[in-house]
Length: 411
Image 1 (cartoon, rainbow, N blue to C red):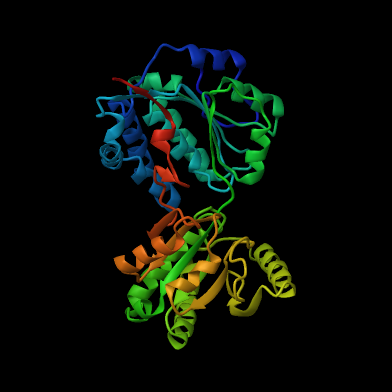
Image 2: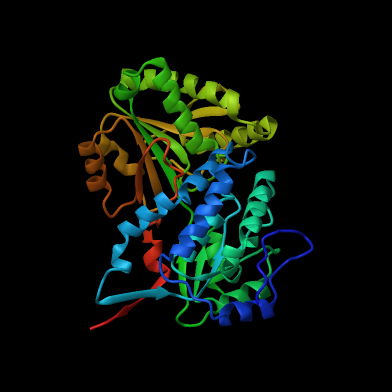
């Protein structure tokens, strides 16, 4: 019986070959959207939401809510084609090797949960650069859940590992995998694409992406002070949770409306966001100041920006020149801004790297207009401000449930 590794420590660098063989050969089988899997994830959810050390952390609380039975049941209903199609029988792929990113520490759980809901066994590589105290608490929660008798079979399905960059280990896991889920961006993808895999091994890759926010200035300015502060708090959660380095964290703010209203929006929104940042953002201000100074210096030399607004190292607005690249900044509270008169002026800034557009103040017709304008050009997700980091099974254009199962035709 394979040993599940959940306590990440220097003493144990990787799962052994013998354990992988056992993982592959185990006779235990879960079905697609198995009730046992849903119950297991629900138990992990309750432990996270009941933990004072975890439920106060926004991204951990979001994970806890995502794993709830009510949420998973909604996913099941939305994907009934996998379980209710009489001509198509869906079954697990087998073993999935997850290469998880270091900049979004909870991503390994989402990736694992999706594959687990498809009945797959999982080897999950967690970056050694992850070292937050709350992540250790999450590992403890998982260990506790797996220690329960009713969850015994999931020890066969989840193996968390960590190791330095090691080509031999990467090759071994890749050769044993029926699918690889490769997070971490372009360079990670290039590294793993060089590794030989069996011809039928499926790769699901997540390249470097950037994201934007779009505000309708008139809608924001019509709010009272409390409502404006609430919007700023939601934007803070989208932006600062991972130091603005999550693929769906906005790097640029587009402001749509007339010139006077857009300018007023920028001033008021900066002040409200600064109030939130002052209360919540705990970071190395000296390092952030240095990063921003270097970034802004490069941007000025390249004539990428025309103006800088803000007097706080925690939050800086830099006005983009026409048709300049709106992504790729240093993060940590540096936002490119662009005032536009209509939604069509957003188009020059859209390209296939754009993942998420979070929006405020748009009606459904305006959202539909953006979808039409950007069709075939970019933007995978349109979500309200405050929802940018909410993980969904449709991500970067993939329906991950569809990708992580085998569909067999029955005539």
